[in-house]
Image (cartoon, rainbow, N blue to C red; front, side, top):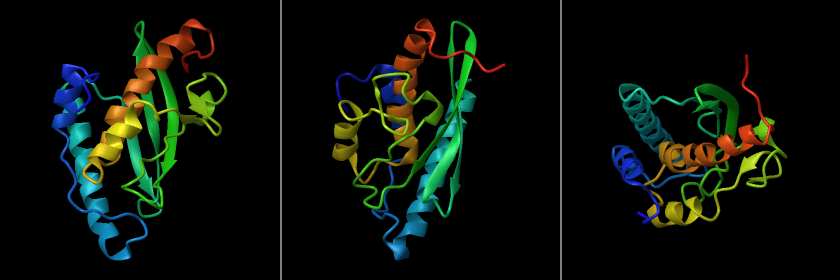
Length: 166
């Protein structure tokens, strides 16, 4: 993994099972097996987060794993900031990583594309490419969404761009 990943992140991602089925939504025969692996990896990741008292998201698949939605949160200065997130499984998955959207933050940070898609191109996408097809949804959340929240939420709070939900 890249040298820029800290020890705790390496340890946490190292506990997420690597996936073995190389199939995307276009592969009707193997997609169900890949989806089962994705769900098992997510269950594992969620369990390890809860055991460490570090849970930070919920997620559920829609339309047989073609779409995903959930909630994520980040605690900054002892205040919880919660956001809805969603993404579609790319047609070329697992070669292409999902593009995670936080629609309510669209236009509030430069590290976001149109539609509320978070910017993961510089740090995450090369890591995904090197590890495809072994990485899955849990890896995208752990190595994509989590660090993005950690970098952007404090900045957005200090700028007054976001406030906690009451």
